[in-house]
Image (cartoon, rainbow, N blue to C red; front, top):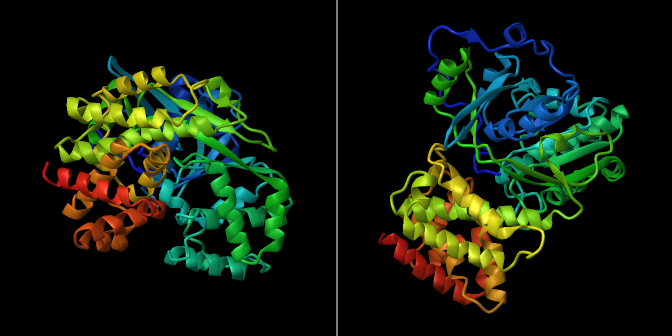
Length: 488
């Protein structure tokens, strides 16, 4: 889906007009007759942000007509979203924003909103017999994996978590005073607690913009168990836990104070944490659910045997062009997706990149022409204020899965990959000029950008994908492209 997966708060909770009815379950029941009690928790979710609420929580709300599939949702980097939602009994308004106007719905599938620091509560939910699945929207970097797909032991948080796992997975009780900080380590602790409780089958469903995200999650968790020497945990993972891969799609920009005010004016609800999204939504899943799942297909989800083509179509065409807009569009002074794609020069760059990408996608079953036309229509929706600065965050990781594979494929086919090179060049120029949004590569990124001449290109590309350096023509081409954007 979108690049808003890390957005964890409404971004405007202080601007609520006076008056109106507080959004909570008692008031919702009195006004609409909706169930006043939350559904029992059967899903644990890591990454309580705007995208989760616009996507998985929305799908569950539509599908769960019998009120049987409640979500316990845990925040990532900040407790703010949990605090805001807990004050509203997990309820929030979803604003579907089209070119013709807004449609506002109250979503009630989140039964419990929890500060992610409450690892004890996460472990309890994962271990509970009623919990059938865990979903994740922790952003690409939230998996804390290196370029090789293994836990990044150079990351101090990962190294500390491995030590915690070594001491606790084999102990009689967990010492949660120094509980894990990374998502997969926290999840592994929950799986071990589930093994001890004898709770049985569990499905883990990754919903982040990563190729083969289910397999990547599986490999990362197994490797953590191996590093921790947790043989019994590994055996339980192999026998009782399945990993589902997904392709997700729904553009979800950051909520503004104006959106908060609009909900109050249109509905009378005083909602501190609404979410804005587009009418379009898509969810493709592949894998087994040993303990059941909501009937997400009622909301339009599709279940397939081979998800790879859908993943690549979405990662390259939607997310790849978003990344292009974030750097090349920003270099030309644009602030939002709609502004950037409205620039004829930038629009032509998007079309050129798509032409490269579709050469490496199956011609059958993906309806690529219609998909590209729909993307342009979605990008042109100026009522969705999708900020390029938000999309451009953590570019080091995003470029690795959205742009580098297309460039490598083009070069392997004997072509130059000029459109893909352009994206990397715009990113390199922004890094050198100090114009990049936040990136978790942090000091390593700053050091690479500070190197002189072509050395900086080499060091920056190494952070994205070391394989790119095996082709000297790529380094030279990216250097030229960066030079062009530096003069924009």
